[in-house]
Image (cartoon, rainbow, N blue to C red; front, side):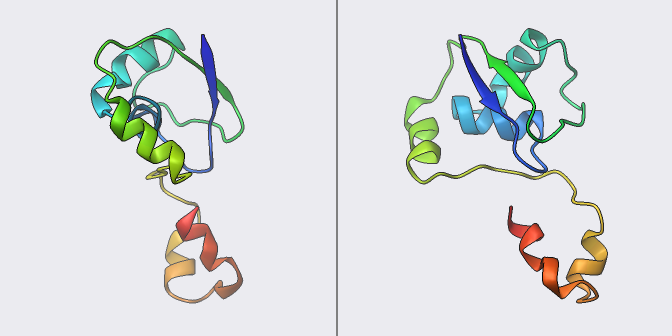
Amino acid sequence: MDNVVVAQSQSMFDLAVQEYGTPLAVLTLAFENGLSVTDELEPGSLLALPFYEGTKTDVAAYYAKKSILPSTGQIEDLEEIIEGNDECNLCKCFT
């Protein structure tokens, strides 16, 4: 079984799309890792990638080829970044 490292601000849904090409895999991913689909994931943690029969290989391959790591989780201090109070960390919005 393969594994994936959680990136900054990634959710279970982000990882399902990234690794399986569909958000429908989120339940399988969460169950295999003993997590809830709404659990906040720790960046750098390792999750097991179980087999999922409905994998959209073309979508997952696109994400891998383009090195796209979807991360829709909320970033702390996002309001300050957007308002320009923390200009040095603007790139946090795009990680």
